[in-house]
Image 1 (cartoon, one colour):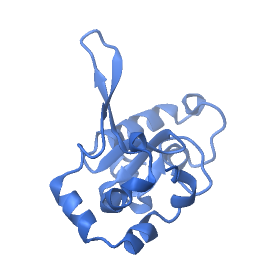
Image 2 (image 1 turned 45 degrees about the vertical axis):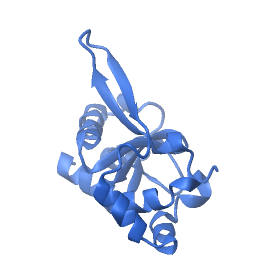
Image 3 (image 1 turned 60 degrees about the horizontal axis):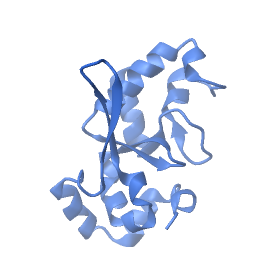
Image 4 (image 1 turned 30 degrees about the vertical axis):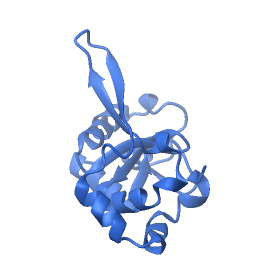
Length: 150
């Protein structure tokens, strides 16, 4: 799988988990591996590829990295952002925070959080206002029973 194919996978599904398992949400790591993963994906023969492609997805401006599903690293494609914004009151605000991994001068990694709705572009906020609740629910239907926590 290429980086472009990994991004298409996220776009197609709308929301995917980086590597965790969930009944209604696809796992990018498992899609890259081509099979269900047991244990840590680093031990899989495609572990380095999984790392490279998940980092490519994390760097895409069209992907929100957050903890939307089961408090696990989740990727939400820009095509569903209006639905997320429209139904934001159904999610704990921390689940909609944008996560960004930053490298410090010492070489350490630090996760930066940008609170919802600070990361939301104006055009997405406007699209969310135009979106009906029913349309937003259809977009997020596989997730709503599992992630509603408010």
